[in-house]
Structure formats: C-alpha cells, structure tokens
Image 1 (cartoon, helix red, strand yellow):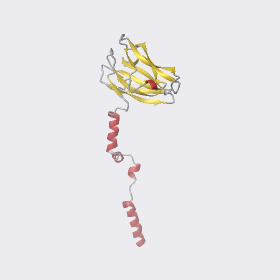
Image 2 (cartoon, rainbow, N blue to C red):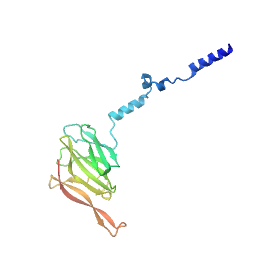
Image 3 (cartoon, one colour):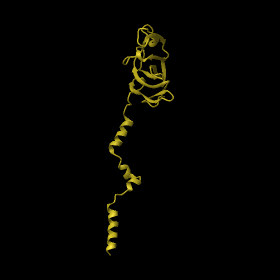
Image 4 (cartoon, one colour):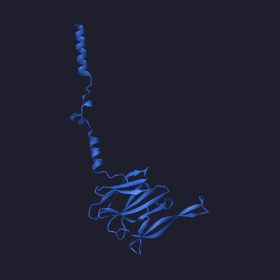
Length: 202
C-alpha cells in the first residue's frame, strides 16, 4: 500500500509540477500571442515609414509629391549599384562599374524639377563617376553622359557640374587630368579642369 501511495504521489507531482511543452510544439493563437508587442510595432514602423540611410528626397516629378531615392543594392561581384525609389512604380536605375554610391537632389537654373545626382564609387576606387538623371514620362533619362573625377579633385559636397551661363542648352562639368609633377613627392598630380557638354534631356 505504501508503494502504491508513492507511485501515485510521483505521478501527481509529475503531472502538476513539470512545465508544459505544449506552446513550444503547437502553432496556434496562444503561440502567436507570445510575440512581443514591441517587436511587432517596430517591424511595422520599418515597413511603413522609415527612410533608408543615405536616401535623398526631391521634387523629381512635378505631377506628384516629393519622394526619396536610395541605394538599394551594391553587387561587388558584378560591380553594379542599384538605386530604388519610394515610388515603387518607377523602374530602378542600375549603375555599371560601380561598387557603391551617394545620392544628391539638385536643382539647376532652367530646369523645372529636381535632378538626381549620383556620385558612384568607380570600379577603381580612386575615381568617382557622376551621373545626372531627370524623370521624364515616368522614366529616368540622363541629363549628360557620365563623367569621372579623381578623389583628389573632390571636396565636401561639391556639385561638379552647372548650367553654362552663356547657353542654357549646355552644361559645364569638371574632369580630372593626370599631370607629371617633378616637384611633388609622387612626381605626378591630378588637375581639375572643365569642359562644356550638351544637355541630352531637360
């Protein structure tokens, strides 16, 4: 009888005192309720309202509200950088021979809308290649051809291109020239010069 009492006591202790593993193995409403409220709210904020780091906002489309552009993907293997937009209806821009980029929104005299300036890290990282894009008819069009500057010729947030004051259908842009310099430690230097180019799209 004592033995039966001990067995019964052990069975009761096991049933009442051992932690239940049901919530760890069954997926149901009880398990879903265990998701921390803070985590759910954070995920919602990220999806709905957070602007990506490095994004720029501009009046790129006169027929719509301002929206942002952001670097979406850097593919170092294929040396391409992809730019995406808050307006998901717009096609992405893929920059070739680029392993990263920074973006700016600029406005030039003679242009009715903001222009997207892309400062891309060229495949040879001592250079930066610049692109200017304007949104026309729902598509991003180049304002001028891409152009390259050596990092020695870049300072701060410089915009290395401007409208030609003598001809609004042209732009003046900077470019780098390699020059032998016997007096310098490296025996060479990079000189910043300017050239005039036609506006391709306005």
